[in-house]
Image 1 (cartoon, helix red, strand yellow):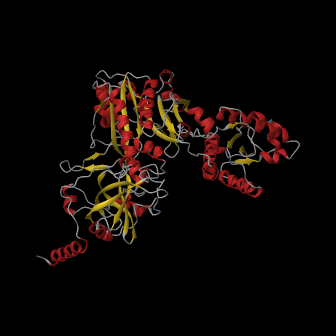
Image 2 (cartoon, rainbow, N blue to C red; image 1 turned 90 degrees about the vertical axis):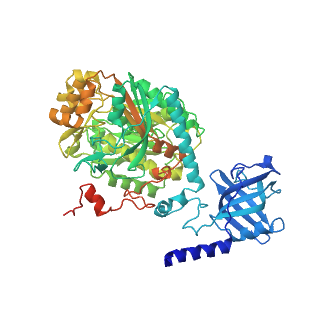
Image 3 (tube, rainbow, N blue to C red; image 1 turned 60 degrees about the vertical axis):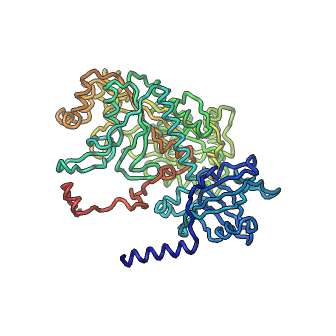
Length: 637
């Protein structure tokens, strides 16, 4: 026996002798820790789980025993069971234990109203110490742990926390509800490959080198896009998959390199049919969290979303922006030094207007600093009211904003002192570089609207949860642009992906070649509270149209044949009209769980640098593995 083996054996013997670990034997668990209530008073039970907390009162030791269902208090009374009491003296936080005893109603005044099991306790007559635990770097009994890196390194401890257990129980229920709904609607669940060929889908691929084909690579799928379209060509009519997807992109709170999406495709659909299916499975998913949804969801075109909210994923929990252009005469524009040809926009942040004079002045300077580079400025309505010449203008502005408040509240609601009024005006001499994009003001003001809402959200409880449907504002955004201009490369790219069908009238009007900026796609997004849950489209089902789209994106016929030849060939064999959508399961659960990061609802996530701290990945591999894969590392210069 080696010295290391001998050390480990001696160390193990010392631990066993010290606390006498038990074996489970024939003892079987009868209940989960969170299930017991006063109705089980007097019943003999066996619980198993972790020691959440231990409190030693001499002859009485209290153990809070935890499993995924909850916590039950266990009483170890020296007079009832001296042996069990002695073992409890050795027990510590996160030890694994089995408890046999009787349920007892707690005495008057001793109940714990904060625990579902707080009206009872277990009087133990037997305690088994099934495994010990080192002192953990943090306790799963803590509600929150500030250091996220420590949480991710010891993820197996972090996942024991009740909040995390709740998140993953919710995730399981949501996924099952969606799966059951789609199966009932006639969808078939079909898996698509993880290892495929690299295709352009908007982000970098994760590549897998081939050992048997030197110099060639598979790509992990960013989505099952082409495969689900081929399944429609194959006659399956309705497909879905809760699919794993991979994107090598810069990360943030709502992104991960590997994620899960609810992917579906249908043959012969109208856009509205796709909407009804999605609304159906979202209704089923939200029902698992006791939230009832009203359908159909609101719809809005992309152009209206930009004009009213300045963004293509509007947060409908806030009032829209309002055009104030028509209340400013040319004379007033000149007097106030406002650019004559550009729109003036205003908006209200509800309940955020109780600022002192000093705070308002600071906010004005903050807004001016934000927009200093783009020729926008802040117009102080309160200041206008003090000037007799401008008071009618201030009154007119407030009246217009009050109209939007009334629409937003679905009741008479005038803007008043508790609301924050913001009016943004383009200054004289606004940089000419912006003139080519008529939407730039809407986008900039829309960004400020969200920035200020975030600034005042907590203090003024703008998004205070009610536990009802009112907390969840769904929206369909439709008719996205088919192309987007890349200023750096000076080319038009597909705004969604190159398999999205344009509006037929735009094809007939020749806009694919003559006016790409005006081409609308049969593309749609589902948005919830300002978060894009998913994107979809009606697809191109004709080979000639697909080839034309590739050409319009600057791809030669030879290049298209090389990259998508198998797909173009498939389109020539009787492809039905088809369309679909993919929604982020992680994002849906994140919002339902009230979490602020996808890492709270993905069991083993990566950091913002795409590192798995628990398993320490990625890591270098051996020289032999590199040779087998025909690879070598090079140093960047």
